[in-house]
Length: 109
Image (tube, rainbow, N blue to C red; front, side):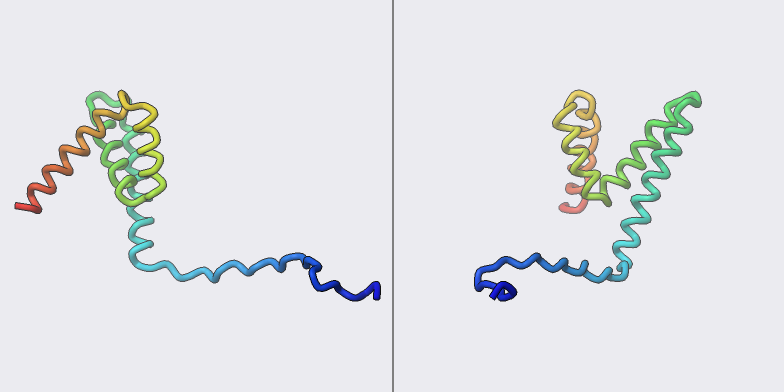
């Protein structure tokens, strides 16, 4: 009887197979491409920031907008940073709210 299994014996769990990878949809590819473009534009903005004039900052903001509109992780990070450093990101938030209100007025009426 030593080899018999008792009724309540626990067996080691069999590892589950990972779900099959689905092919990327057009929407997901577009989203990844826009995130990549946004990151590239941010890097370009950092590269031109030392040049005279305000060229780097608007370019970096444009890249940030592209990333924020297409990445949920980036939005969560932005919200967390906005709550942690409200004085630093306050102007960005005011600008974003102003643009959103303008867009809603244009679409609504």
